[in-house]
Length: 288
Image (cartoon, rainbow, N blue to C red; front, side):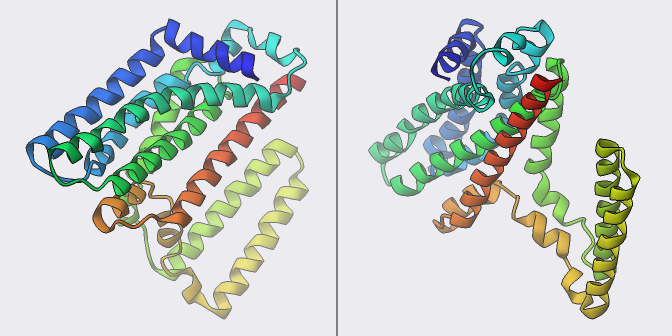
């Protein structure tokens, strides 16, 4: 794993991808730091970090797109898959290399609260917690990009698909306002999702009995719950998806000085989930 980590770190900086990633991210956040904190006089560095979430959506796909897709295209992944290294060690080595590049940028950000403190009033605890949250959000974005890169040989497809998923999370708070809140609408939505799950299971298992059984049993359960208490379906999707608005973690810090521990746990859990999915995708390629 250490050898893979060193190889990936070396590759990122020899190809200038790591340098460009750090430069663009630091420059973008630094611009907002100058505008918000140095010129406008805001005492929270979190404002600049909140704006920096948009730049993460642009630079993370560049960092992650080659993690697996390039090796699949050039067939160099065969060396890794046939080596006496466990799959999770391969994935972990690559993942640690990418978050190390992100960590360098975050370490540079740690200077900004000190500059604010030197010039006047600062909120060091809130600002450093904000940097930590920003780093964890970046780690989640990297996990998503790494997983999508493991699914394709084309770096462009990996980058575009990653950017699309990250944009969904970024604009999720705006999408919530357009979701229906009526119980019947949410009930129909669940039935549609259940049908999609059953269809995906059929495509993977080629067994129509399993797909049909899940569809029928799931539909019956939903109908029974709806008949007993339809109010459980009111604003169901809005309340559920509201937990995935990652920008609220930073917003709560600089607006209320509140660290959402449950949100942090969810964020880490999502990163672990996509890390696990990447292992499964690579494992499938090894046996195929």
